[in-house]
Length: 97
Image (cartoon, rainbow, N blue to C red; front, side, top):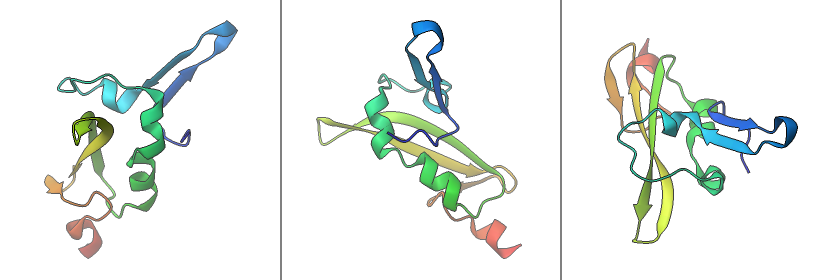
C-alpha cells in the first residue's frame, strides 16, 4: 500500500478504521467509491515526487477501464499559467521559466 500520499487519510485511534482519499473525496463529479486497494496503482504519489510544475493542481476520480478494472485517473492543471497538463509530471511553461 502506498501510504506516502499526502491525500491518504487514516484514523485508527481507539479501534477506529476510517480510511479515505481526500483528493477523490473533494471531486464532486466522482461516481465510483474509493477503496484502499486503489492506492496500489494510484499515480498521484509519483506525480508529486517527479513533477516540474511549481503550481500543480490535481483532481482525481475512480474510473472503470475495460469493463472490470477500476483505477484512479488524474487531471492536472498548472495554476500559475492556467494550463491543462497532458503529462502532470511536466509543465512546459514552468520548465522554461
